[in-house]
Structures are given as structure tokens and as C-alpha cells.
Amino acid sequence: MLMKEYIDEAEKALLHTYNRYQVVLEKGEGVYLYDMEGKKYLDFVSGIAVFALGYGNREYNDALKAQIDKIIHTSNYYYNIPAIEAAKKLKKVSGMDRVFFTNSGAEAVEGAIKAARKYAYLKDGKTDHEIIAMNHSFHGRTFGALSVTGNPHYREAFEPMIGNIRFADLNDFDSVMANVNEKTCAILLETVQGEGGLYPAEEAFLQKIRKLCDERDILLILDEIQCGMGRTGYFYAWQKFGIKPDIMTTAKALGCGVPVGAFLMTEKVGQNSLKAGDHGTTYGGNPLACAAICKVLDLYEKEHILEHVRETGAYLEEKLDALAAEFDIIETRRGAGLMQGLVLKEPVGGIIGKAMEKGLILINAGSNIIRFVPALIIAREHIDEMTDILRECLSER
Image (tube, rainbow, N blue to C red; front, side, top):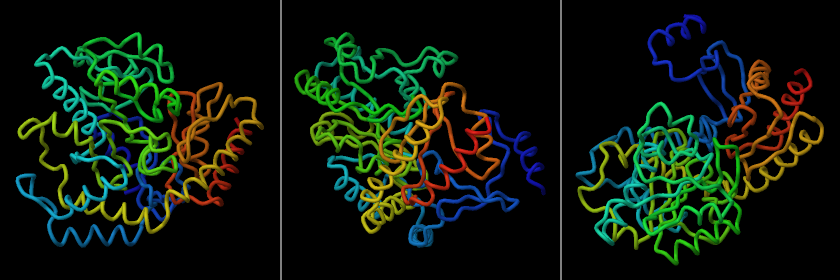
């Protein structure tokens, strides 16, 4: 079949919830993807910040193949060695104490919400507790995650959401304080907002939120699904600021392609929230997914990924700043590490489409922001290649 024929078949069979680009991707190698006609693309999306180690990593692939030959799934009625090892390794890099493995980031957010509400319920026996989330945030498409997503456009067709959610503004502590009351049980935010426009949380804001939570026994939940796993040059973005959440969510690059997420918590929250029977998952934490986590974390250490991200992230910032200075259409650059955005004065869909024609895969964050979330193994020469193609696209618009 031709690529167009496959696309036509997909449109007949798949639910149309995505406006997909008209390309069928077939294989990947390093930081490049290839469509079924053999066209090569430099990938600056990495599966939306998922394929941190690039495509075709031999050690990663071999680890998954070896686990497949042992056992893929058993359920959580039994222990399995990869889950135990993955939890131990994840605790070490995060500094958290308890782990619950999920299948996705949205499920991790759902679990974090449940843990926060159960923690509050065990304190006073009430069920009217509130969570403060941030405007312009994105936490997922399931009902709980959607309820704390700070963009009404995503929620309006599916109301009513779960109740008792208030929204404040990121980096505006006064707006948070205006929403705090005796019912507040948790404050939830992305350490770097992704879909909402590549806005990093400021150190002073995070420190004030942490102090507030400590004083009032409110749980701080940090969503590190996109900005975590080394993308900002730290395993988790909050580690740069010397603060620690009570609950944290992680996913995307955690499995580098295998669908897996997790929510983690401190021992205090772990001992005073979810108990046996309160939460569960059939597939979460199965041997295959956890073998992926183990190998990913081993390779991060072996390949010095965090150090590499700090170096290449600074170079990406430099190159994007140069583009912003060169083209009046670009308002600004913002982001952290290898999670960057160029804010334009007009919609970016046409530029992204032109870039794909020239062999560069980009993605947006909102209508007017080009987002850059490449594999964490990206090198300077790849950043140069991307910059040259994007410069052509901006010049031809």
C-alpha cells in the first residue's frame, strides 16, 4: 500500500480525535525518523518529550527483549523483580519515598489527586476539601486530570468536572493566597508548564508555596510529567530550587517509549493516605514497563544525560535567542533546558508544516508557540541543522 492509502484506511478506522500530519512514520534511528517512503526527518518532538534516549538504542531494546522472554505481566497480586528494582532506582534519583506505577501521566495525576484527598479525609473525616491548580496548566484528558487542567476550552464540553477545584496564576503568589481557605488540601502545578506555553515556575514562587504548604499542612503536588526525567538538566525540575513536593507525578521519558508513569510521595503522605483497596491498576508496574524504567535510569547514569542536557540546553537557548533577534515575528523565547518555546506574533501551524516538508519535525504549544522537546541525546550539530531549516521556514513565510 502507498502512504496515502494507509492514511485513508486510518481515517476510516480510527476515531478522529487527532488532526494528524499527513505522514506515516515507519522507523527511527538516533534523533531521526523515517516515513514509509524513506524520507528522513530530524525529530525535535521525540514523541512529545518521550524518547529521551533516541530511537534504536541497542541496550534499551535488548533489555526489553530479554524481559519479554522472561515474563511480561503478572498483575499486582504478586511481586516482580523489575518493579522492585525500578522503584528503588526511582526513589534514589527523585529523593521521594513511596512509588505507585501507572500506565500514563494522566493516571499518575489521578492517583495524586486521590492521595491528596484521602490524606485530608483522614485528618478530619470531611469530603469537601479543595485543590488549587494553575491557569494555563495541562495535566491530562481523564476526568480528574482534566478537572485540574487550567484551560476552560478542554473542559467545557465535558462538564461537570470533579468539584472543589480552584485556579490561581503561576508565579503569582497573591492569586494563590486569594484561593486558600480551611478546605484547601493541595496545591498542584507543573514545575514548567508545557502545553500552557513553556512557562517555568519561579524559584521565589515555589519557595513561598512550599512555606505555605508547610505552615498549613497543605500538600504540594508537582507535575513533572513533561519537564521531568532530565529535560531541564535535573532529574526533576524542582531539584534545582532546593524544594521538595509532597507528591510528584512523572511519565513520558520515564519509560522512553513504553507506556508507563508513576506518582511518588513522601513517607508522611504514604503512611497517611492511600491504603490497600483505595487505588489499583491491572497493568501498572508490570515487569515489561519496569524493565524499561530500570534500563532508562541505568543509561541516564552511564551516558551522563543530565550533564549533556545542561550543555546542549544552553546551546539551544543561544541559537533560539539568535533567531528571536533576527526575526521580528518572534516575540520571545522561554523555557528551560531542552524544553523550549519560541513565541510568535501569529499562528505557527504553517511554519511547522513547512518545516516538515523540509525534513524537520516540530510541534506547537498553543496556536502561536513552536515547542522544542528533542531527544536528550541531541547534539550541537543537530541543533545547528534544526536552526538552519527553521530559519529557511521563517524567511519564506
